[in-house]
Image 1 (cartoon, rainbow, N blue to C red):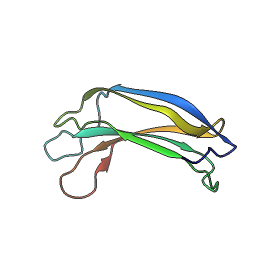
Image 2 (cartoon, helix red, strand yellow; image 1 turned 120 degrees about the vertical axis):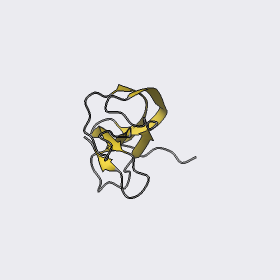
Image 3 (cartoon, one colour; image 1 turned 60 degrees about the vertical axis):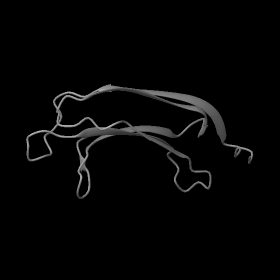
Image 4 (tube, rainbow, N blue to C red; image 1 turned 90 degrees about the vertical axis):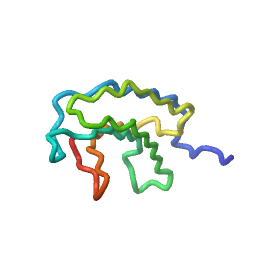
Length: 103
């Protein structure tokens, strides 16, 4: 195990994604198959100590009002004490082609 870089500390990050409402329709059937991606990363991408954590919820099929009720923990995640970003995005899952960004 390598020691942490001087500008990094260990944190516990707990994420809970509950639900979405009135999402955009991205499929021909008038619905979407939504899931969320949750990212935590450092802002300074030029740093040699860039850190990125990612987690994805389950996909809820054929709905515009998904309920995920999912949690994730990053225990002892190495992150800078400043300049970290939490980013949440919702996508429509597609069997063929790229998934659609919903917001």
